[in-house]
Image (cartoon, rainbow, N blue to C red; front, side, top):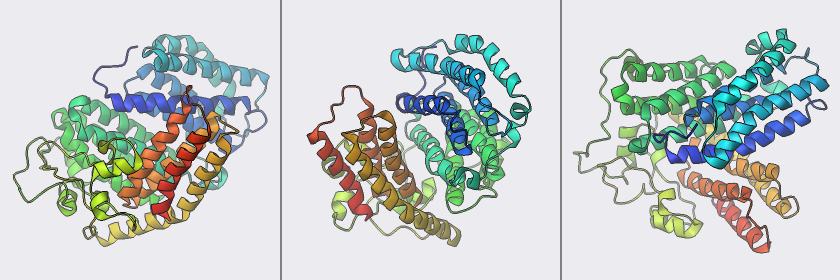
Length: 454
């Protein structure tokens, strides 16, 4: 299957960069499963398959999505204590994994795959595995491991990284609607978010996902309006979960519910030039009023970086590398954009929003030093152990800092972490030579992230 020309390049590029890492996690986990069939190990398998499923869905690779979905369901059954991993089951699981890996690697390496044929070929094996798992497979959907079982806060982990990735994709769609199939992107991400909500038993977040999907079915011509409203609700739900909510995960707003019923709702029109000459991209309060959120549109400058530098994307690019676009707010067409959002006091938040923001910041401030230490330790070992798993751990730590800073309103740190994450991901390239110069450059990049954080 050749990639659909309507699918935006950025999402597809992200998927093909991330997928080999996820395949690597699954393969290593299956090879080690007989020795370690712990809840945490099974969770890693299931989560990696789930991420491949969501990524494939977001870029229109339906065959890959179906293959990953079948594997995810099988992996869920392995949570059961009744399952015994013997030679036959281990061999069958590895063979089933190959049915996903082969067409996915074809897609990554050549830009095309015949995943539908692979799914047809894999069907007898999938059915055999499912039958051999018996009641463990039948009851898999009803078992949700607790954070205590996993040794981690699964809700926080998924919402910090995976949900933020989905929100980033939708933000890019909103910023570049002409290069995206907006309705298709909404449906794909709604399906992924609904899966997270079901897994974590967060009915409010699931209702947001289902309502945004229903809205785009009822009013496909208003996909951009629906996306604007849905993003606000999804962000609020994510903030609530990161702040400790484990009961609901947010709620769909009245506006989104009305759109889901097919009703007309007044929403900002991002396709037409603004008639308010007082609004510019540097006015964080005005942007917050238009797009929702609050301090999300203000850059929090490190103490030792002048405000005029922080407000200048080109200056940030000179400091941290890359292009100015990496540090600029994507402003909808017609919105004046003389400068990027300037460092300023954030607009006043509601007491509820302020409490959630403070909770997110408290968690982030506790977690960030450990993540920074993980990056530093990984870079120290990289010249001796230059393998995929270590690179993944380093990039994942930068990604977690990016997500935590975003949820805390620290946009400057988020921009730096995003750039550093991309640098670390590039280390997966087969032509990368890890010498002393590269090691020192990577450490300097990490210090650019550490200094404003500490």
